Structure formats: structure tokens, C-alpha cells
Length: 257
Image (cartoon, rainbow, N blue to C red; front, side, top):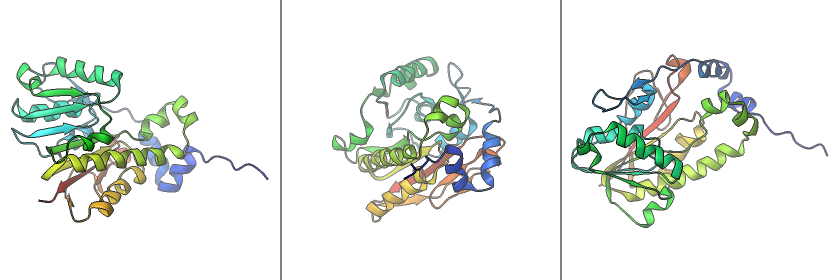
């Protein structure tokens, strides 16, 4: 029997996007113009405008206790810290020592002493966070590890080792993180889930699983970003329709009282 050939990255995403896939690939090659997150930073921190727009979707009020579950390299932690203005508590977590070192450096370089004073950096496996804290945070940001197809497409080494098992594995990890985030969220609190993947199985399908398991407890909050596409759950900023921005997926959820 002839061995079945492994489906390629190009074939996989062509099946998802049809004729649009070529436009998406062309947009991946476009040079992105990153911008400084805020003039209030002590040192500039440059981000894709799509990331800045997504981070701003999480409702933040002074005095809140907030968890950034997968915080490195630090852009979204900076965004939250600026809005807290030194009033509240921000837990910035990343389980990778190397990424955590980068996170610490970014916080140290960019924030004032007052803004830094409320941040605690942790290095836990966020998928098990809910075993230690339940209904403990006013807001949780989960910028989940994902397929990052734009990076894969532009990197021959990563492209050569890609397989369809990667998004499947990541989707399982993403749901474990999302479920943990939801459990550790206070009633009435907000949870922002985001990725830089264009794969539905890592985006709206992960959110659908949460609704399947917690339908009586969770509600989706409608959000709006210019030029973003509304999905079954959440929205997508796609580079082929935004002059190269993104991709970024985001969905804002609330735990019912």
C-alpha cells in the first residue's frame, strides 16, 4: 500500500480559505509598520497596531486585580499597566524562563516606578492556574500560544517542519488555558482571548468549546475594531484587508453574576 503523503501548509490553508489564500499569502509578505504603544512609556515599545487595538478591548479599571496569563514578551502587560496607573494588582505570567527574562526587561525599561510597583511576575503553567486560585481576578488576558501562520510562512525552517498536527495540538492547549482562565475569573469579570492565528480551530472553535461546557455561566461581549471581520465568536483582523496588519483574533467574554 502506498504511504499517504502528508498534507502541506499551503494545501491545508488553501482548503480553509479557497481563492482568498493567495491574497493572504501576499499580505504576509507586506512589511508591517509597528508603532509605539504609548508616549507615556519611559522607552518606546513598538507593536503591530492590531495588537494594540486588541489589548484595548479588555475592560480595565483602577484598583482591579488582573492576570496576564501568557504575558511575554510584554506588550499587552504594558498596555494594562498604563491603564491601571499604579492602582490595583497585575500578575504577569510566562512559564518560559527566557521569555520571562524578556518580560522583566521590558517592564523595567518602559514603566515608571509607580506603574511597576503593582506588577508581580510569575512563571507557572497557566493551564493549571485554576487549581490554586478560583474566582480571584476582575479581568484575565489570555494571549494564547498559537500557530502564528505569518511567522511560519516567512520562515523556511518552521515551514519545513509544519504539519496538520500542530494546530490540533495547540487547540487542545489553548482550551486548557481558556478553561483555567475562566475558572480563575470572578463572577462579573471579563476574559479576553486572543491569538495571532488565522485557523478557526484555534480561535472561534476554542471559544465554542467553552460555551459548550459553561453555557449558563459565560456570555460574549460584542466588540468593534475598524476593518475587523466578525466571526461566529469574536473578530479577526486580517492582513489582506488591513494593509498588512495582523493577523489577530480576539473574543471578549464575561462570567455571568
